[in-house]
Length: 191
Ligand code: MN
Image (cartoon, rainbow, N blue to C red; front, side, top):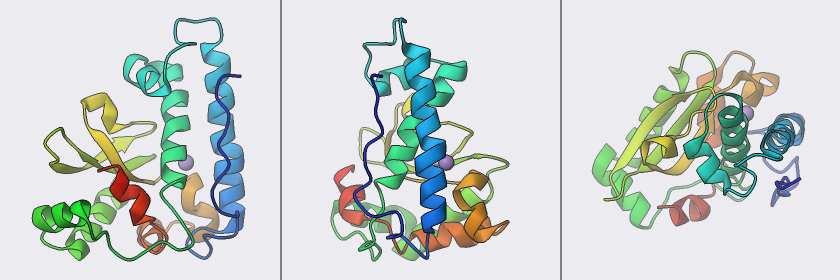
């Protein structure tokens, strides 16, 4: 058991109503735990056993990539939120967002639009390249932009398990509600 699930820095009911207690318990407590359990089983006794999780994501494929990347993506996602979140980033990231997307509102609109339009399961990402240029990208299934040399800054999960208990088929509504809980101090530290 190399990898263990980190305890969330908030209570399971603390993100409601944006994300309900029931969804946190199923999504983080069960879905995410399963990815970590699978990852541990898959790497046991292999060349990947002593690698960092990010290196496994960059260097694996198939079922190992899927479980490693989903394990990482969910921790990254859930640790981007806080019951005291919301508002706007005001440091260098906020400046870069305004410069590249025109305004914070236009960025939010483009990000949610990209997430809403992913066909099937996946993740919408804000990432940066080595020059600090920002990118909004769509990834299917377990995809992660670090496999393309980008550094992830923010992601919203668009798998149905992320929102169906609370929003049913209204994916864009679900994504828009997440802005009220984004912890911009954490997200900004990734820029
Ligand atoms: Mn998920």
